Amino acid sequence: MAIQAVMKAERPREGLKIDIHCHISIVEYTDPRHPRIVRISREELLSDLDAAGFDMAVILSDRRTPPEAVSQFISAAPDRLIGFGYVNPLRPEAPEEVMRQREELGLYGLKLYPTLDGYRADDPKAFRVYEMAQEMEMPVMFHHAGMPEPQALLRHTDPEQIDVVAACFPRLRIILAHLGYPRVDETLYLARKHGNIWLDISWIYGDIRHPSYRYFLWRDLLKALNLGVLDHIVFGTDYPGIKQAEYVEMLLSINQYAVNPELEIPIKELEAILGENAKPLLPT
Ligand SMILES: [Zn+2]
Image 1 (cartoon, rainbow, N blue to C red):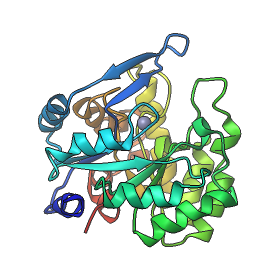
Image 2 (tube, rainbow, N blue to C red):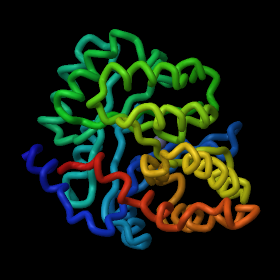
Image 3 (spheres, rainbow, N blue to C red):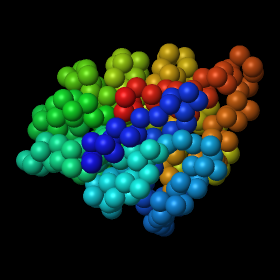
Image 4 (spheres, helix red, strand yellow):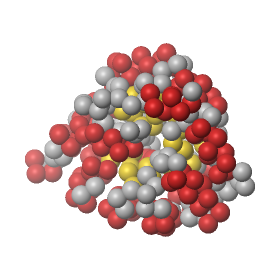
């Protein structure tokens, strides 16, 4: 049944739109001194996807939402929702747990949180999990950004560690969430080096509703264009922190900050971020 759920996620890919970074609940840090938890139901998510014209979404496990809860959440809409599991790869049982989440829970990929779980992504003890994921053709998404919490150490978001993982596992599809903020330049360069790295644009900077957010997004996507990696940028929101319709509107209007037309990002390339670029990361 679980395998069927994975297979059912196959969709016609023409004009596909997918949000690759959704949670059932998130801690929202617009005001870093007063974080708050936002939760949604499956009905709310499907209704928000419909409102934005989105076909599919990836639902991520995390420390508040265990893989079992994600499996249950996606089970009623397997044609639209893809689940990602979660492990701490340093735990001895982690590789078997990855296999169980794929085979028993029908979860297609993995989400890892080095900064919250306190490990280096290139710790050799984590390699067993990368091997298993590569073997099972599971994409692995890293939370690859800071978090405004004292215990979430920036040393565990260092792009140099991902560089090692990508070099050692060239068939492992790696997604780096949040453009690697605050190390965006180095993270973009990783995508230039490694064809098996994709970057998502889910909630990157601080205040998502301040106009500066669009400006920063234009600036960083312009760097991606310059580095030749715009086709490895994929759309994610960090839903329910922000809804798909709002974020698409923001993405498609970033050229207002181009100081002259030569610095605009071609609209076709912005539209490809909404779905086309993510095709290699989806079930075939
Ligand atoms: Zn997230």
